Image (cartoon, rainbow, N blue to C red; front, side, top):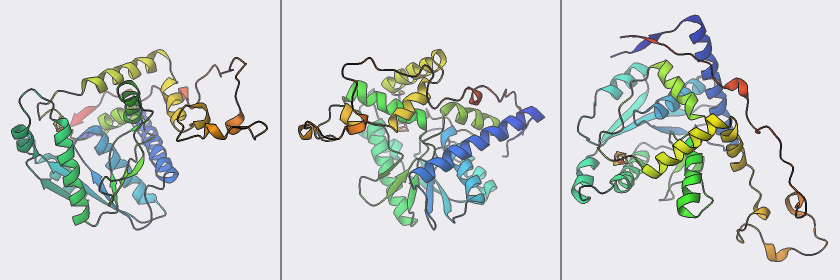
Length: 307
Ligand code: SF4
């Protein structure tokens, strides 16, 4: 099964431009957070959704031109959900000619057995999935595990934690796994979801639907997602500015005593973080930082699918 698309000249030009931007975003995230080093064996977790297909595609493209050598191994977990089209990923990956492994584990059955009907299954399911992926990483001598979360996932998590968790906490671009043995990376950390959506559409990745388990979507996350999308429409650049803010934290101007030693403030000391405007009205720029209006729009995709 090979799905290809025909693009007119303008669409091809726009797709190239979009790919260039995604490559630049991923390349910068990899460099900024030292995500991939020479000799790494990177396990690319492939769910069959638009994000993970895009991650694999862009990582492969970077692999071809990178000055360092690293390996990519695609891994999919077949959770035995009813209706999971198990032929799609092997066919796609065989065509790419990439090393891959499909792990078959009936987590669907376990979750259905343990969780009463009508209760949310996601937390047990993702715990099981995490354990299996870590075990697979060990078996395959993997040095980095790559997940397909993007910038908008990271922002949504920030707001979820703020609104429901009482924490100023997002989703890290790089972390150590709970068992302390694996390094997990998020190469799409700087990529916008709308770019990924357009790219996945234009490339006609064979997307596998994500609602096979029959679980309800996370309603709180959905609400935050809608809120951010609405802001993005009404105030272009706000999302970019908020993401810049995540990279520009000023601990002395928050209230976490673990992050900043307020008791050490003494008269005559050097001003931390540029001081304060305790008595002044703060001057803020009128335009959003980190926003390029030219990046908007483009790729008027009306693709004709050719099977
Ligand atoms: S949506 Fe379904 S497959 Fe995804 S984590 Fe929840 S239970 Fe698991």
